[in-house]
Image (cartoon, rainbow, N blue to C red; front, top):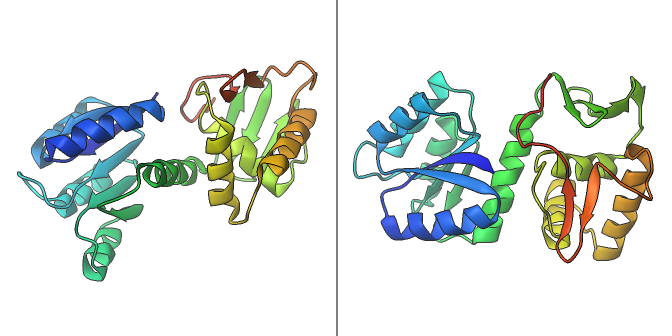
Length: 230
């Protein structure tokens, strides 16, 4: 589960959003105001912050500024203030995305994963199984040898890599690949690219150990979520 902090003072939104995000693989900690949000940031480690602008205590803009000054964590504003001025102000405060209410839950989850992917693309070597991922160069290696993934194969690999240990349905993969690639990818194309990716990263593509098939659900990359740096 990916730990996130939700800063929101509307309990009905908190309850519904927490239940949905749990199904999407996120572990939600809730704060109803600025003071509690900063306290939780001090006490725990979060991969992402969802932040409302209007809070019962404090406000989202100052909270975002305080978080960005002290912590290296992406922030997404989730607010009913959808006018251009509010959006620009939020982004100028350092927010990584700005989503207006009402929002579509699946779109929110997709944009959260997009922000997490961008945040993960920092210099350094990461590992999964016997593979080494060079995030700076955008390559995947085994025993120091580049596996030469195509652009879309690498994008697909990153979707799995950033969701390690989590079951992903074909629908979720299609949604993420379309979002990342900026082009239409259909179900048949997804099948072809998963096959090609396995042929390059698996020692035995007929018995895949890195990207496993979860019957009746989809696929899962083995490993724990996180940046995987060593």
